[in-house]
Image 1 (cartoon, rainbow, N blue to C red):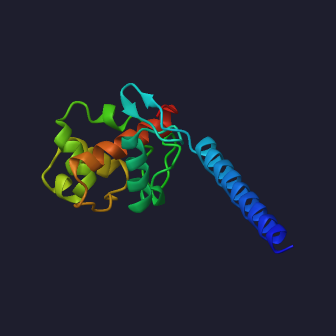
Image 2: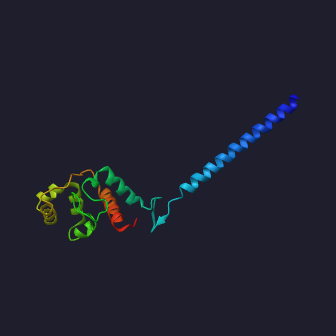
Image 3: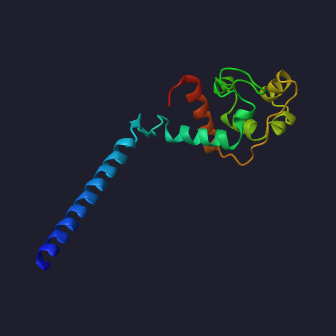
Length: 155
């Protein structure tokens, strides 16, 4: 009788281990199905939300810096600040660094007499943009990528 109980206990333990392994295998499979590997779009890794890494960084910067407090997320419509769709084209007659300078410190660029900066300042009732001196060129490029993605619907 003692041997029979030991065999039954051993069989139960083996079944419990097999059940646990089956559950873990199913759990692992479910995770892989929910989070597929990021595709590569034009050589740039994209996230599961369809955004490139640069665009996702731009979205994070947009949210972290409160850009949506003044600019419409659609990028097509004015809000407290101007619509941002086409912002790069509106600055294309000037060095790229001028757009960076505008985003970081618009009052300084306005004070320098910069033509485009002064034009925007007057157009928007002498309202200057908030200061973002800690944004790097890479950060600004990521923001511009996010702005373009929001406007065009492309990652």
